Every structure is written in C-alpha cells, then in structure tokens.
Length: 258
Image (cartoon, rainbow, N blue to C red):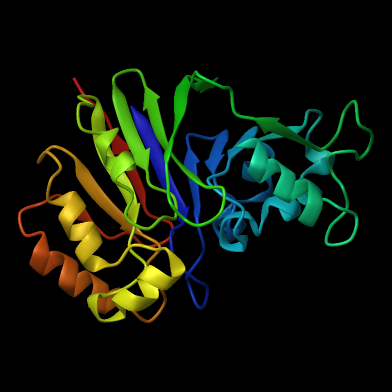
C-alpha cells in the first residue's frame, strides 16, 4: 500500500493554499514547497529524503527552511535527490551563503545538515521500500516527473510540464499504476498562458486522462488560485465517468492492489 499525503498541491499561495509537497509515508517527500509548513517539527525531523522534480521556487521554497528547523533533532543529513542539473542550481542559487547558508557544508562537509544526491543513472532510486524512477517532463528548465512503486502498486507524478507525450507513453503498459498526479494550472480560456508558461491546461489534461484505464485515478493538482472552480467545472464536464480527484492541500489517499 502507498499512503500519499498532499501537504501542498496548489498552484500558488493565499489563504489555505500551499505549494507542491507530497509525503510518502513518514520519511519521503516529493518536492519541498510551502506544504512542508503543515508538518509539525517532529514530523519534519522524520523526513530523511526529499526528491525534487525541478528547482522552481514553489517546489523548493521550504527546502532551506526545513534544514534549518530540524538541526537539533537529527544526527544524519537530509538527502535531497534530483538530476545533477537541478542540484547545481541549488548549489549556485540557494545554498550559496547569500540567499541561504550553505547547509551542505554546515556544520562540516563530512556530516552536513543537507546532502545533495544525484539520482542513480540507468536504474531506479531505491529508498525505504520505494522504487522511484524519473519520467520525462517538458517545462523549459531541467525537470522530470516520477514513477513511484512500492510492492505491486504504482503512482506517476507529472511534475510541472506542458503536454509531454513521452511521459504518457511510459505509462501505457503499467499494470501496477493506480493513479496519476498531474498538474492543470489553467482553464480553457487561458490556453495561451499555459503555452507561454509551459504548463498544462484543461484540454491537455482531459485528452490525457480520458485515455487512461478506468482503474487509474486522475489526481489534478497545481490549479492556480482563483481558477479552481472554473478548472473543476471544465474537467468534470470533459471527464464524466473517470475517477477524477481534485484535492485540496492536506488531503490524503491510500492505494493498494490485490
């Protein structure tokens, strides 16, 4: 069984909106947006691994802060996993002693608070019972999605991306797939903004989710604040009969297969 907590799943902030951060059980996060702030200090201290899709601020905003917050409660580094190009961005622009202290060298380089770890080449990342495999994404910067499997159940995370045929092609023969967590930032009326920003809009998502088997849930995230109702109305009209889920930050799902 996979327990997925959507600590943050909004496309912006304001009120109860929190940006992208998904928890797998108690020790793994996918992305590190403002959703981390919903965890208690003790819960944050149990996070051993943070797996990043890309370096945009809504996905890494709380990465520097969690490192600073749990230093007194941990004796081992938090491992941050990503493509080498993404890790280089973090080194140059976040942990640079200008924007934020370099926690990859504090208290020292042998035992830092944060350890930046490149994803394995040619094989999945195996951590805490999960097998995590990068999937293609198209967002204009170094970016990926993920296929996450535990025993005989799998989830796919699109990350932030415009429509990416290679992502969906990778899922076609996946018998273990229980859900796809896919972004839909914009409504139909904002198609041009979706193209400009390399995000998904309603029609892109409808076309992709309608082709999934009925057994696969479509969990639609990253809806921009103020557009949530319009996006939901359009998606429900276009995906009648599908297992369509439009979560709010804090929602939790469990997935299992016999």
